[in-house]
Length: 405
Image (cartoon, rainbow, N blue to C red):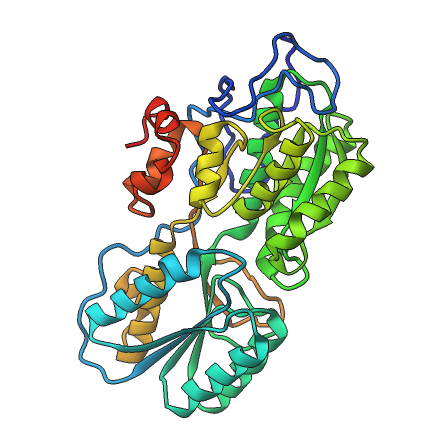
């Protein structure tokens, strides 16, 4: 097999990804023999990429230990954005946050705005009216989020931006993952998988998330492009297009990718998909075109569907952002603010990064993310984010082969 020359050290804080063999998966598509020296959906390539040494994020370590009970009166309000951009808010964030506040003896009111900015505003006004001491918000968009922050500030309520920052807002704190690094990890892992495919100057289509509504999506794309664009500029790969899945709406992903694939002449070797839902839509289109299992695809969120796609050999990787760490950090910060404690005394570490140039006083907690490939799907189970039975439902043979239990 001819070896491509795509290896690149990630710019910034991400570590160099060690290369390892990619092997054909146990999905419905099987790789053909032989090799190809040109891009364009080469049938010899396999979507499974086994990295023997996945990178470790250099972001700050999360606070350890469960929140302890505090002697402080006050209520925390939490507003989550929707149930459509990701399943995480219902499955993980809401119950984890409630559990942490209950353990500390702090009252909490946790609601979901269901993707409706008017409902988001109404919930916020109700929580402000009932006198919450801290408001944790994961906004639908920065404009409505910043408006809520202004109302909270006028009422003397401390605000924590959760997962998504509201650019130009007035929140005092922000808790999330190092989102630009997430994009770098996606881009570099895609490069490594393409490097192993033996395809010279592979064709890449980028499927960004909701950069029109979410600054995290902007950072994901920025990080990925810091890896991919220099390679494109030097002629080592060809970026055919960069498409935005507006509003993070999964329904928009398949039509957008179909259009991009048609514009690329029906040929693609790698897809930078911003998350697992977009990746799954891409897989569906590729299946219709006989390319599933032969195109390297990234993902994010380590959802059941994404992990199953990895085990079946139709997706290369996902990013595991352990929501347990994020919820714990936000809860500890809120508990510290209510009880008048120094957040650092509870293990909360603030980043030196300036996330919002218009809000210089914003203190950020940026947590580490993890690359998940075929070789370490078990890590998601070990972390307690998912049960093996959830991942392996309907694909037990693939799980057994990969050692997921």
